[in-house]
Length: 151
Image (tube, rainbow, N blue to C red; front, top):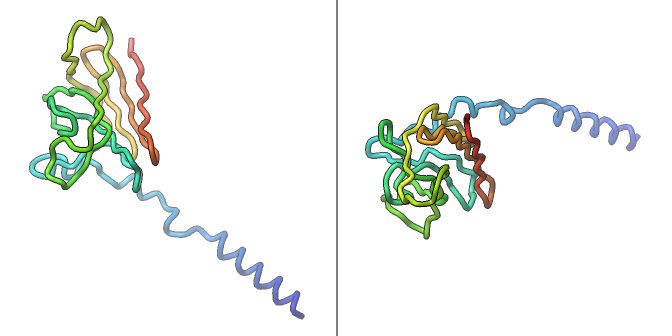
């Protein structure tokens, strides 16, 4: 009798576990990371991992962590430690990288951009000066950049 009740209880538990929950629906497609990025909001648009250590995003001014600006402002690099809602400005000893091709004789490698894509957890852009496609995503303690030269 006890085994029969235990068997029914296990079957019932397996049934409820196998049902799709509302949390499994794909609502990420409705998130717009661009909300708050223009005007006074100045929210960074790059990918972010919940409670993650890094928040990589493009920068469009000479100061790291200054954030994204709409076209036609050129992109100056990709900083790794953006923050939102703290008043802006560089904080936390930021690290900025900028992919480029050619000799190391110049210090300004800013570039206009095209085909900018911003999705939840993903950012990509093609740098027009040297046709480098830059893709960014992030994990708990690292950001990942995929650089591809478009020929």
